[in-house]
Amino acid sequence: MVHSVSHISIFLLVLISYLTILCEGKVLFFPIRHVHLKNNLGDGVNLQVHCKSGDDDLGVHNVTHGADYEFQFRVNIFGTTQFFCGLVWNNKLHYIDAYIHKRDKQRCGPDCFWTIKQDQACLYNYHTRSQDCIAYK
Image (cartoon, rainbow, N blue to C red; front, side):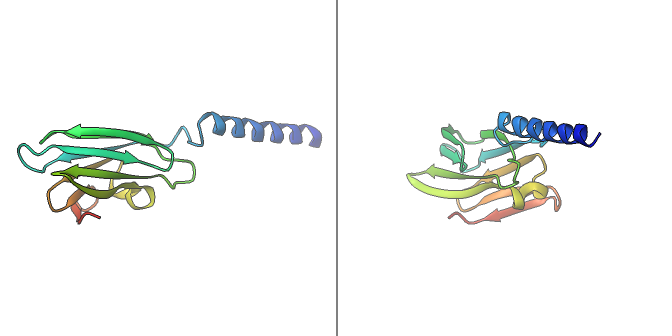
């Protein structure tokens, strides 16, 4: 009987390891997160967005005034997922930390809504029902 329990334990360990590898380190039951960046820079001012994580480069996207750019992902198994974005308008480069799991898992819910303004970027906080604004880096 002990021998059979040992085989079952080894089988389960191998199965979990295999599924983790198939999921590229991402747990299937973690919710999908969405990040939205809305261009609120003013009429006629286009926003160029380039977002990256340690694993993914999402490429360069042009966003017209009033439109938004959205990307989605699953948080990694370690809860260390982070995305930063380079933002360019009027030939000036700015940066924001668009998603940091430890910071945003409660503040955003499944969706993070950023409003990109000339002087600051503002993230909607679901808990306070207000905007958390930061100066650009």
